[in-house]
Length: 375
Image (cartoon, rainbow, N blue to C red):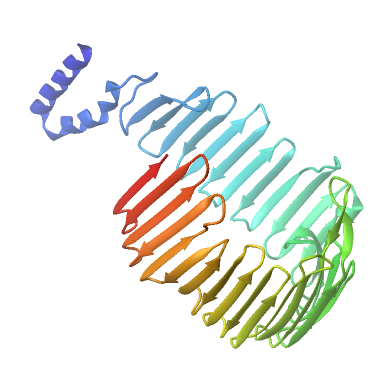
């Protein structure tokens, strides 16, 4: 009855006051549903969280929110700033005009940045040693620690050392790019006029290049101990190029049961051979292609691949002339897959079948019509 009276009164007020009351009626329509707090449409909402205990308040559309859960407090005025605090895990985050200014703290670890150009970071490492970093990108990099080996300073491009930056464990340079030495795990690379000339050495590895003229690198089969204390093999390789990327020869998986050899003179041809797979393309990449998959048990011809493809074998059966038609399935595999189309994207059909489930989907013009059946 209360809801009926509210609807009647709202209708009467709107008749008397015109468009202004019509707007109020829309704004307050949220009060017609049961919530723990007022629901005034885009003006104000107070609702329960669904995945954890707590509630969330939103006001003025997307321009204010405040969320409280078991331990987390979130508060923001998008797009001006936002603040998150979780005292249980000692975590805090603040952003102002994201991504202009940001501050993150997790326990003793912290980071403050302005446009990622000026940044301060620090905290306790796994060795329980405090480390502080200062960055004025891309000119000045500094790290200080109680352990002298962890200290470094770099002034680009003149002189310096970096640790765990630029995707390398360590980088040392003098008048970059004239001399740059980098290390990643056991591999050390000495660059002269980076990245044109370099010499490289490591565990079972030697290499050199004058890019893009010529280069060669060779690595023997080696062994290493993994995180669980087990000794595992690290496959070797042999790589050579001349006039990159026109001509190259590569051998990977050296010392394993699946050594792969590939050589190419682009765009004339590309040939790949391994115990499990053979493939060649003339000319590369859209010429006549033939692939034999001994492990997956099928043979495939394409001209040009992947637009025109015909595959035959136990593992795969495909006939495709894109965009006219295509039929592809895996008749001898479990699960069974099937994919068809005619005048792509006018008609598309997919089927997936296992012992316990079968799913079919038919589409016309992507999502203009879609029918999915599952049993």
